[in-house]
Image 1 (cartoon, rainbow, N blue to C red):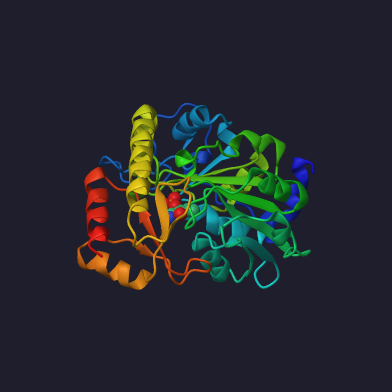
Image 2 (tube, helix red, strand yellow):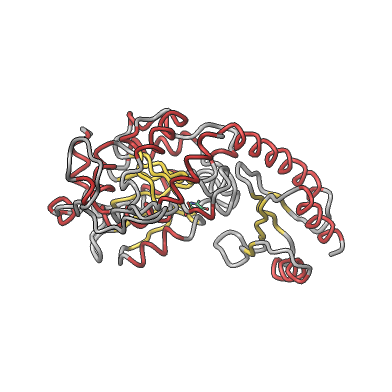
Length: 344
Ligand code: PMP
């Protein structure tokens, strides 16, 4: 597929529309006095933020080994998730297919946009079979949702099965890599240039420790990023967020050190959970959380909650009956979890 052919996947109304033009994008040349955007001339945060976040995209591009034009930043990765529906899926007509179980927002955003959500079940060990997903595809399937490492299961999806989707499915392939910095294998950014229909999602909310500032990343071909930029809110990433992200990017080594610490803790918690008779199964994880199976997930969840420890009860999620998802916390928090579990 030529890169220009991607545009055939875009909703016709999105192709036709003229984007909003920000005051500051309209002039060229040296400027000293800004009387163009109806801002207040006084204050610290009186100016609108850079709508295209050029300074931080330059830093992200260097760290991730991509071109700045291959990056879109959003209000968390939840923003690009919603925009993918609004760009590619005609409400009431098109459909998407997603692995199941996976991150709940793919379905919520499908429902908000009136787009049919089809599922390709993982097997009982959470393995992914590309053929099961391809069997759900028809002429109106615009997007395939993959999440690797997957939430809530924790495992990374096999490379050969992802490659099969990239090679055989003619629509947009999204690989959500929110947890990639905790994984033992590299992600798919290196293959962006080879797959013009691929969108990789990452986020500052997990490894970077910035869930509170809300900044997510979408990486894709320049053609797709141009369309994201056309439909997103002009000032979708605020100045405070851009400043916090910029500082974190300057201290990327500190993030890497913290990630290594979390991985050491993950190994320790897995070992300790393994010695508890209450725990029936610990699923392999490539993320900063562990999915465990117990006999009575509701009872264990409530007992933990009664001692002030909040975990995620996944008992009602497909294939996850009896399962609880626990995030790796500080050593003291993890010790408190283990100590409580020992009493149950
Ligand atoms: N993708 C996955 C797989 C997630 O688990 C989450 C958050 N739990 C997100 C995306 C959303 O992240 P953000 O904070 O960037 O919106």
